[in-house]
Length: 118
Length: 438
View (tube, rainbow over the protein chains, first blue to last red):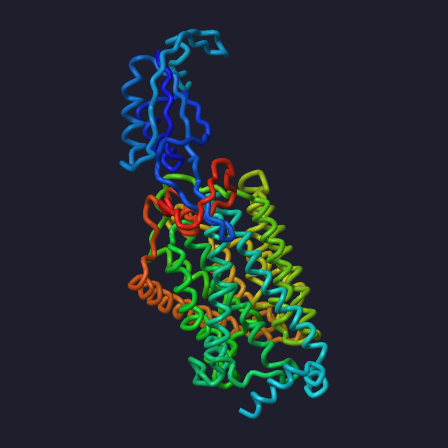
């Protein structure tokens, strides 16, 4: 099992979600975050005061997957989130020690396998 | 020239202006108030539309209305008013009053005040079009479009409907349009749909649902629109008189009927009455009663408002499936509502209430005249708007790029965010401005 953490552009979120659903990756968490990764600067003006936005709005996805889903998940994010410009984001793949599904108490592989819609 | 000089001195001596003029103080007082009320409708529309869009586009959406307050007002005062109200011929006025030539403080209602009162109508009409085009149009192209459209479309249609008697095509035909059902609402709605046809849908249209980001803004905007509409319809009586009182009361009654019917329709169809639905219904009712306000009795206005709910309700329900990205349903509310109102004006117009008799009083021909007026307004607006969109497109790019649409037009077109996260904002000092807008 792996935890895949991806930082992407907010405007690419819908494309990424669509790609993940097509790759049958369910079970994910998103959060709106801010960060700095060396991207180009965005300049805004408020009543004549010019400011440089040093932090960028990003979306963080956290997806817990079984081994078989690691590659499809990465591929889906790569294709959907890429624009080719600086600031497209990163994907981190982390090892996971243990997963427990709260509803049933199932552990590990069983816990990250989506429930078949009845 | 002597007249102009005289006016100048009256400006310098306001006391003398009051003493010298033949001003009707009651009329003038009401028209001053009405002008301010109608002006408020444009910021109100900015809130109504602003609440309905996604938060990355709210400033751009509101600026489309505020931009009209600037550019449309100017072109109206310099050219538009004369094209609309100069005698000219049946189809277009002249330039006799261009640059406000000859418009002084004479008359029961000072002539100059009419420029301001009618100017507020021109502004909101141009602003209304923006609801069809939000989230995809580049701002400079929008400004150029509304400036041209006010002169070459709006002023011309205003001439047809409200120009001097004897040289106004639709007025001379006997068409009834009390406060601008054709000139304002049908005109703007058709321009909006033509704009969608020229610019195309937003990039995610039909794939994603676009949800309103601030429904309290929508209710605030609808409420302020209703408030301003008392000046829009009440002021169109051009006096503090019975006709104004009738138009005013009808402006209260008809939208109430539309809203009630709309909420019942929603309860019947979906089991819940929505806030966006109620706000939309109020606007539909206001649109529908606009051409009728001073011509129908109060019970006629209630019937008119109630009936007007149906076509707009079902059109808006079906619109997304028509593949038409008229994003904020300008056609459903102002086009369909305007057409329904214009035709029903011919049905409910009442001689007893100071209007021409309509169908219910045995004058079936009036309905036919109303239909002709609607068709003429649609035809003019369709052709003029199409030509102007294409013309602007030759000079300035009309569409934002896909990436700009994705990031949102606030940051890209205006360099601002509606709800900025203030962390991480670094002050740029003079001379080190690098990067540019992302």
